[in-house]
Length: 437
Image 1: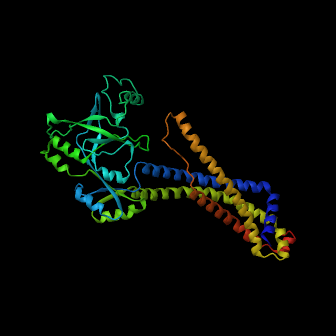
Image 2 (image 1 turned 180 degrees about the vertical axis):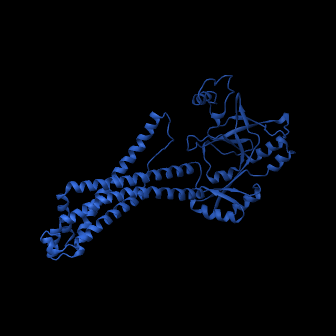
Image 3 (image 1 turned 45 degrees about the vertical axis):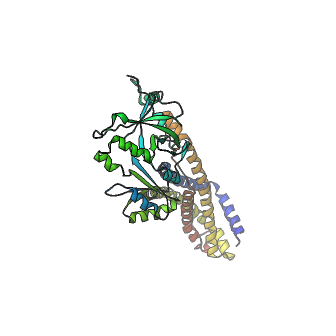
């Protein structure tokens, strides 16, 4: 019996019981859609977590620390010699962190940076250039926003937190700081530091402004100074102070960059063999992936229960089909149809039901997913008066989830039709022709 004949036979039989077949397809559709939608929540949370980690960390970055001491120049040279290392950036914390221009003042995260390695690692500027001489600096994108006049007395009285933030922006510096000269104050909170009153300020020029952060909530208020200026700052703050003298040659932050993310694991292993502690986004993602894989597997398992419930309907439909078509089965056997052919006919019918259910269920899941992601932020904003996070999604359906769901649904469908199909092969020809089944 050719496939074309089997298809025609199955199609004609499905039309005879159209209502029952479509109700079975509807159950399969709902089961498949529920499986995909439930699992899509886990995939959405996983994607959000990964995107959040990657938004403020570079995939090819490795953070370096020593267990019982600070990193120094010799450590940097060792790291630079490791095969696969593209650049080693290093920064030193600077105790003096006050800067001003005219009546505007701010406290920033001031660090000395090795500019050639920063450039090699991919540090980007919104505008301007990197420092080329001692008294040139680079500022963060939000530095101007934090450069403010002193607030008048009772300036924020009676305002909510959101209103106060907007009000404070009125005091921020409004001009372009690029190529402006600002005053760097040699002041620190450390009471042990002796400051020379005659040399407590330096004039520095802003030659570059860092690139805008990818996250709206991120605030870049850093200041990068040159290593030569860093040495001068320490000499002003008091080179005789034991605490500062000990810290002057120590790096507070050392990061290794590889040419690609694929090399991070191998380079990290080499660095760890030199007794350094390493941390990278790759290791963080590995832990996240293990956790979320278990979480998604649990959701898929729960969703599969709905598919199993739908399979009861398929089993019932196919069992009824075998009972109602016993005479047809007897006739097919009488004219030479083999048990294998009869089994394939009924498996083909259950497969058709499954395909319809899986197809419609997948389409329904994508429609619901799109609708939820579009409508939920609007609902939250309208009824809770809270703006959801940027790029917020509750449902995410990657192609891998679609493949997994389709495989589960089709597998369950065929298993549901297997027992009735096997029963069809056992129908006795004579009893079937006498309608005595």
